[in-house]
Amino acid sequence: MGLFAYPFMVNALEAGTIVALMAAVAGWFMVLRRQSFAGHTLAVMSFPGASGAALAGIPLALGYFGSCSIAAIAIAAGSRGRMGRNRQQESAVIGTVQVAGFALGFLFLSLYSGVLESLETLLFGSFLGITQDQVLTLLAVAAGVAVFFVLVGRPLLYASIDPAAAQARGVPVRLLEPAFLLVLGLAVAATAQITGVLLVFALLVAPAAAAQRLTARVGAGLALTAAIGLAVTWLALSLSYYTDYPIGFFITSLGFAAYVVAHGIGRRR
Amino acid sequence: MLAQEFIRNALVAGSAIAIASGAVGYFVVLRAQVFAGDALSHVAFTGVLAAALAGIDLRVGLFAATIAVALLFAALGDRIRVDDAAIGVVFAWVLGLGVLFLYLFSRGSGGSNGAIAARTLFGSIFSLSGHQTELAAVIAALVVAGIAGISRPLLFATIAPDSAAARGVPVGALGAAFLILLAIDAAEATQAVGALLLLGLIAAPAGAAMRLTAEPRLGLAISVAAALASIWVGVALAYAAPSLPPSSAIIGVAVAIYIAAFAATWGKAF
Image (cartoon, rainbow over all chains, first blue to last red; front, side, top):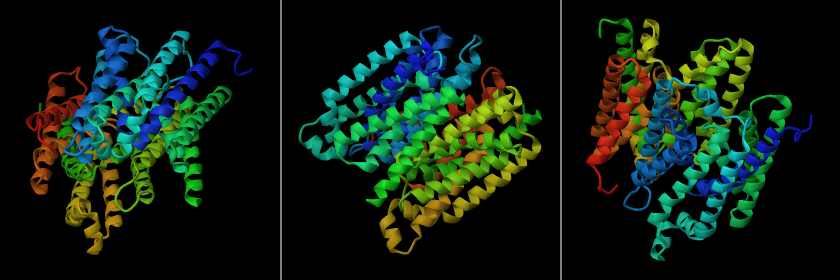
């Protein structure tokens, strides 16, 4: 059967495309700012968000976005140092936020007696069974994320590359840091509902890390990240569809392969 | 409570793991390497599932996977630390492999995988046998001895890598040795609190200690004490409230200690 014969596959391809593009832009800044650990932790926060929302009987999406936002603010506040981010404090606070998320999620899950998606689906996701509504929600979040980067992309870039100089030139660095984490959290929360908590991160980090090995230019880097992200997502979806192996395995493996190839090319230059 | 054998085992093994994790964790936070610890802890999941799939002792897979990835990180990194994006890419891939193994394993065994996956991810300190407890104590003692053995040069290499290298300290080799100790500690702690939560014993007590003092010896002591308190109070809480999973209780206490330290030092510049 062809790839587009089933509505669920069409939805999956649409969702995958949106997710890949959103993750590409957010991930490019994340890798540039050396905040991969924060990105992974924000992704993890979807786990207590989903199980907490199920326990409280509120919409799951509310739980996802709520817990990711709280974590983004906690990380930004906890890693603030005398001069920009304090690496040690940041490292410790992110780790602590992450395990707090996992511990709460596990607690909520064991208190919840109703039928929630299985632990495996929450953690590792499934591209199957994505509804049209979910695609529309994703599109709305992606549009919001796009507007953010169009508006503050430039100052954020400046603040990421040279925070001291940016601050001296009047860029609100201390405001941009939590704002970026908040947007990263939103993007990740939207994505995690589909890819699962543990695998969003592969789409965030691998294409961006590969692209930054190949080019330091901003426009080319963003375009390359998006291209790698799309290629990885589409290939993984088709492979998963035809072979029946889990999508997460293909996404992470293809992302890893892209990074290794880029690393090899970058080293030869 | 202490009359129960499973509680005694949990307390003995838990204390051993807490001492090792508190000591290792102090250096992890000092070196800003919590992300590497996080990656190693998730890798433990893949190791266990690979061993389950191959039908060998789960602990072999656990230790082999974490130590192999620690060596990979050491090889990937420059003299001092590994690029965070490189850690992220490698560990996302290893996690993806874990998903594949989980899938293959569940297909082979007709769906009895849920228990092993959940136990690996979230631990089960109340189901340790006497033998496992002894082994945990021995391994923890080895890790603590390893840290004690390299602590002075490691501290020097962490705080002032350039002058340490100039003075002939093998900065790169120390970093690799430290990552291996971290890997052993992660594999060990996985058995008690699980692959997803062990980071709490590494990051939270040490993070609290780093906020309270900049003096290494005192910080190390506070870190170990906070990790021990997390285990003891957590085990007692979980025993008193059976619906509370022990792993969540232990990590809850560790996080509470961190938050208290955070509040006590609010407004202090770091």
